[in-house]
Length: 113
Image 1 (cartoon, rainbow, N blue to C red):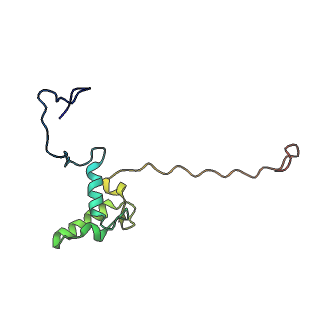
Image 2: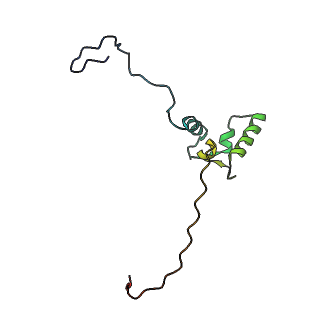
Image 3: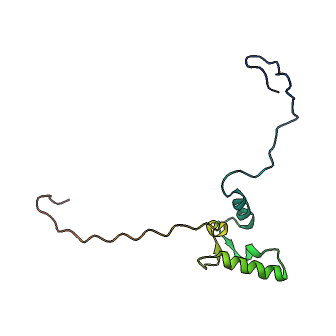
């Protein structure tokens, strides 16, 4: 029950609830459903989903379809799904490697370091 500030009297219309309130909804935020599904499929908790983990519990044609889905999601073909591959997030391309600078000659007025 809520009390009026500075008093212990409850506000009119408030009801005392039995015990703590527990929310049974998934965490909100971007990709919450994908995060929950990834965590459920990643049975050993190593941060990647293998084909065996992805197809676990499926039989017959469902297993073949799961293999096809896995292969379609596995963009880099390393036989593991990262969260980004699983959620279909396209990462930006890697930045170009820096061009090595040529060695500069020692200049006498700077001294040696």
